[in-house]
Length: 406
Length: 102
Image (cartoon, chains in turn brown, green):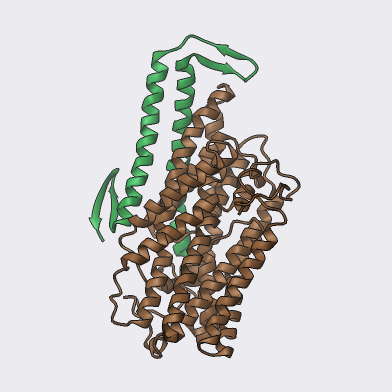
């Protein structure tokens, strides 16, 4: 077994692990409000979401492998990799991908531990930027696009992160106002039942859309790694096993359910009633699909959080916990730089230890960090049994440890 | 600077379409819930004090028409996601979606 093959295998495993964290990090986006209003039981919600993510991932027939082009310059527009990075059997590129993915995973698990929804795409972009700066210098990063085309760190990360939550807040606020004004006087029991059905429909739409969008990022990264070691591979085709593995990874991540994040989004931000939940989810679905049609690269997490806040502002009597919202916004702002720093540090460790040993060290550091954070999460586990408990001063509720808790 | 303009250009369009679909459809759904409540004979009151009124067929018909509109919008959304995944781009001439291969 050559060292390139070993490294390639590690990159593939790490990419699938990232896809898995992407799944459980984002379950909350589609399902948090449905779980909070009891439109769906926690288990039913994650099962439905997982199935739709799986279907969505398989629907991604046309996948671009140019995902890295958003923030760094290691591929041309056809997907072909800069020759200097593939000169030594692809080792240079594989180490960049390895460090980038590890940085993104560590940030994803850390924000999950804190119960904060943060963007998995921004974490991935951050990892790529960090590893690229460490290996190629600042010139390897694409900071902004040209010709009025939104691109680079500014156009694909910073501006959308500022704009998309604001748009979602407005849309959800208006929707919630309208819904409550129209149904005023209708028996509350009647309202809840009707809107729960609406919630299930819109939550399903969000899950399906997530599967088509997010799984293909990992498919692109794995295919890029394969091309690095085998330059004769076509750049316009994703191998079937890659598609299958990514679909399974994101769906199983979704099924495991990021209960800590679901709790923050469903109970921590605002107390959500069914009509609000439906207004929030419709707002998210409309904003996400419209942006996708216009090629505006927003993050699902930011839109869904914005919608929930907007639905809280729209209902008279509901209070938004701005402390919780503030912590989230703080996490969004440091997602890209944090993932970048971790990735850059890992790349340097790998570089100093040299080929072979260095690659294993990056992987070992990732596994160690992940296990530590998982162990740390056992102190205050959040699981389907306590995900809907009353929110208490921003501190997660205590519960008996349960084995399947994540 | 051109990045900021490009983003703002996209923002107002997303906001406009978002308001029509993202706030308009739940409002239609709410009208449906209200019509159904009227059609089924429960119109007013809270949980403790529900005033039962005569059921109205018209209310139920209006409700199901409104629900049908909302459901078809959700299905259109599903169709849109599927078409995109399969590599088709969708353009809208007025309200009629047109599919073309990318």
